[in-house]
Amino acid sequence: MTGSVIAGLVLTPGASAGRDHPGLVAIDQAVTPLGIAVERVEFPGQAAKRRRPDPTEVCIRTVRTAALELADRLDVPIEQVAIGGRSMGGRMCSMAAAEGLEAAALVLVSYPLHPPGRPDRLRTAHFPELHLPCLFVSGRRDAFGTPLEFELETGAIPGPVSLTFVEGDHSLRKGGADAAEIVASWLAGLTARRGNS
Image (cartoon, rainbow, N blue to C red; front, side, top):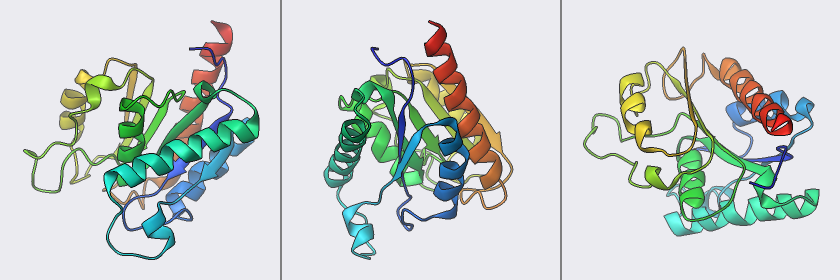
């Protein structure tokens, strides 16, 4: 990896939210003081106020475009831009990385391992293609994935994985501030380690 520091972070929302979701704003406010430029984006369907999420390929293209544009604006290689988001948004970022987007790292908050009550319908087939550092932050009572399920499923990821669990459910209404600080601390640590390597 050519990038020694993380210069930017693209954040995407969950299926029923937009770029101003409180959880994304909290991460933005925690990360920006580190000198990392944060770009909160939303998918075309969300921007148009449509209820149904965009097709996967549209979401992945949105992530790719946003990351490349942020790298261009900051005049850094794409390897210095991290990507991530909440729930569906984070999942789309992880799929973009699995398909070859050479991002610095993945920040996955409330990642939906499976639909509630359907642990057999895992959304992890692309995990073996994730060769970059990955942070997962989820609520201990998240119906989309238990701590034990995360520990088991993330074992398929070849890149370094950090798992952190906070109070709350999938919404993280109670653990949102904690999640934001965890993201900021992890990104700061990642940048420090790369700077010393």
